[in-house]
Structures are given as structure tokens and as C-alpha cells.
Image (cartoon, rainbow, N blue to C red; front, side, top):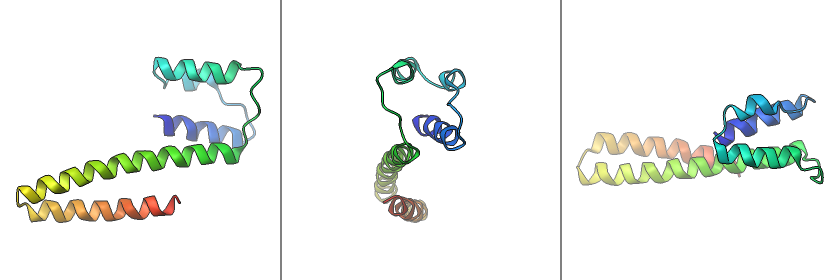
Length: 106
């Protein structure tokens, strides 16, 4: 969800408009709503550039992919223990694609 919100905000900022806090708030849990309110209503906050938002979005995407990779590794180990070579091979292909995507984010 953080990635989705960040991407929406990046699109709005890149398009020259102010992010619509109301529409973003509907997609956030309570903790995220508080954080968004702090950022939006902090009069002393410095402006954030599109580059900074892009860096943030990329970092969130990298973390999401790393968690997904760990999950795949566990599933691969389980498939190997169960001697399910077909499933293990499919999971290894998925991991390879995920690794390519991760490498492109560096």
C-alpha cells in the first residue's frame, strides 16, 4: 500500500498538482493517516523534489521485492524437501525473474 500511495503522490507532483490528501487518506490505515497528516500539516517541512519521491518509491519497491524473494526461497526449500522438482523449478524461475527486477532497481 505504501508503494501505491507513493506512486499516486509522485504522479500528482510530477503533473504539477498538489496531492489530494482526502483520496489518499481513504487508502491508508490509521497509523499511515497520522503520518500523512504530520507531513501535510507541518509548516516547517521543506519541499520534497520529484527525485526524492522517486528514490523513496524505489526503496519501497526494493523492500517489497526482497520480502517476496525470501518467501520464494522458503517455498523452494519446501518444494525440494517434498521432492517436487516441477514446483521447485517453477519457483526458481520466479526467483530468477525477481532477481532481474531487483537488479534493475539498483
